[in-house]
Image 1 (cartoon, rainbow, N blue to C red):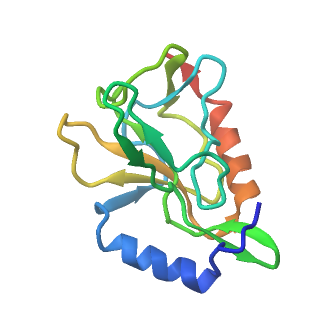
Image 2: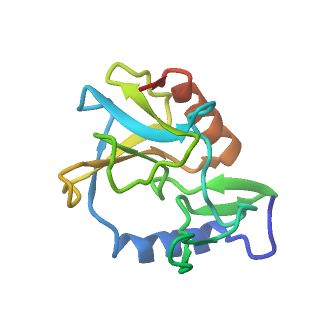
Length: 169
């Protein structure tokens, strides 16, 4: 869905440069450097193609059921419109994964962990971004990101290819 507020390519690049100043540095890999990496999904899906972006119809706020505090959710990718198509800006974010089953992610009733094996075949056009520094728990964050700007449908198709190689823990 393209909205009136959808960015142009130029606006998307400006937003990326602004965000890039405050994000953690990453290195880009062609293959995994760990035996496996993990992603939280649901019992029936890896959720690897579930991307939060500006045009997403899901709520951009969530409420903590225990405290009642409302928090904003951030977009995982930067999108822009070109010729009435929705594109993902290259290296602007992607699908999060971790080198361990992260204790900072709270598991719901139907949540489960999936792993991506080291020998996963990464489709052409997908990069593996790895944070240079570990988090407070000593774990590294990874993301599957687009290597070049591509249609969002192409990006999700490539992520689906990876999803077929993922296994439930």
